[in-house]
Amino acid sequence: MKQTIGSILKAKNNRKLTMITAYDALFARLFDGKADLILVGDSLNMSFAGEKDTLSATIEQMIYHTNAVCNGARNTFIICDMPFGTYTDEKIALENAIKVFRETGADAVKIEGGRSKAHIIKTLCDNSIAVVGHIGLLPQNFRSEGGYKVKGKDEENIKSLIEDAKAVESAGAFCIVVEGVKEEAGEAIAKAVNVPVIGIGAGVKVDGQVLVWSDMLGFFDEFTPKFVRKYLDGATLVKNAVESYKNDVENQNFPNENEKY
Ligand code: KIV
Image 1: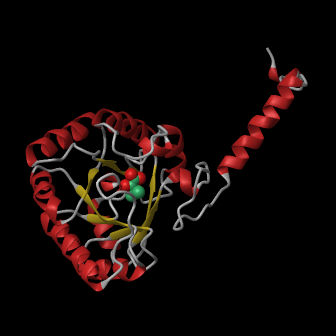
Image 2: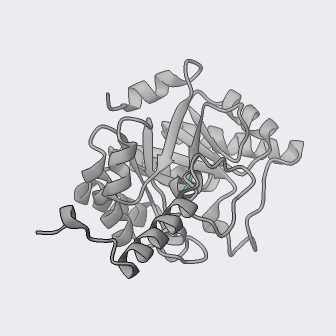
Image 3: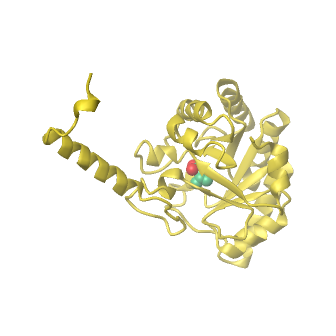
């Protein structure tokens, strides 16, 4: 059964939530009804479009991919990531989020940032747009911070992350993604708020996990972040399959008697 904001909130302290990214209908169909939530992440700019960071993703691309995912996963709660530069103030954020809600079947949008984005989250929630927060390591800060920096390494930073989580919750977010933090920080954040905290590289003591599908299924083989578990060696399977196909074509083993008109 498709999750709702109510059932997602109820999961807190009762069961762990599973979130996975998807960018197209083909894979979304395979994940449909298996994961609780599908995130159309702006990570698609890296794993799908081959860019080196997420920053050049546009709202039009996110809408295109969100529609594809909605077509494939009709029984799953779908979240569309708001890309870099599309929520710089309340007006711009509202225009872009309304565009996402009007032009796709997304159930919610996700916004990176803690206290500094609370006013934006509130504006969207006040206008009937459901919001997932995203705190900790923020991929959209990749250039401004000079790389991906793990957070929550000391007491002071953990306190600051807790303040971020509380601000995002008070602004109306029904769920918070926390990325790239020490496990103690993930645990402290999850304990500090009443909404589910979904971790990625945040240890096990949170309310659920999210992974990028192409990392988790091993299709992205350029590098594997420390926090990723590969549940399939997709890259090897695909490469071997294409090699077999090429061999069969060259040896005229494909097509055979049953594979022709
Ligand atoms: O874009 C994305 O895939 C994300 C996840 C890493 C949470 O934001």
